[in-house]
Image 1 (tube, rainbow over the protein chains, first blue to last red):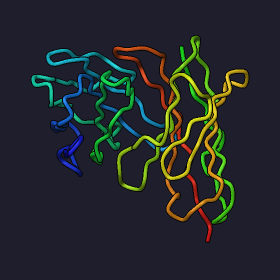
Image 2 (image 1 turned 45 degrees about the horizontal axis):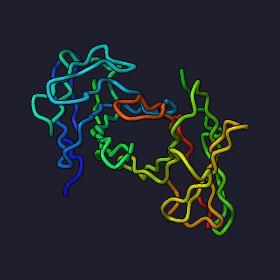
Image 3 (image 1 turned 60 degrees about the horizontal axis):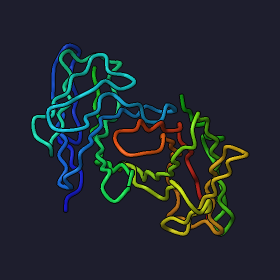
Length: 114
Length: 115
């Protein structure tokens, strides 16, 4: 099993450009999440999904959109990138099966907006 | 509402010394508690968790943590630090139960191990 994978690993954007980050999981997990990690601030939840076709806002959703058309994929979009969106983005997934409650994280995408 | 406080953004210990990383939480209900570790340029991975039952939980790599309800704490310990323990550690809390439950992460503690 590959677990949780993220594409791309690195990206540099200019202000105003758009991009999509792809997250894929092969564990058949119901729940998927997008976080951003900034120095000294821990992880902050951007958006999450409790199942295919459903998404919801997290703590810091402004400037981002998401879609979950397939259970295994969760896409994060930036329509018009801003320097404040320079961050490391992590996707995670989890399941209630086996009462695990653990979140499994991808390796991250380092995004720089100039 | 729930929150997590990790005391000390940076902790340095000598190789072979005790590791103690502090975590205090605030929650309106008895929570689930987690410690995650992040090695450089990697995602987070679970070290250990407390959901119900025994309050002293053991995790991977010799780490353990004790849930103390009266102190609202979940401190992480390891008797003898190893160079490979150098990483950033995150404490996290969530409400109990099935279904989606919001996880709140602390701001992290970077552990440095000195040879």
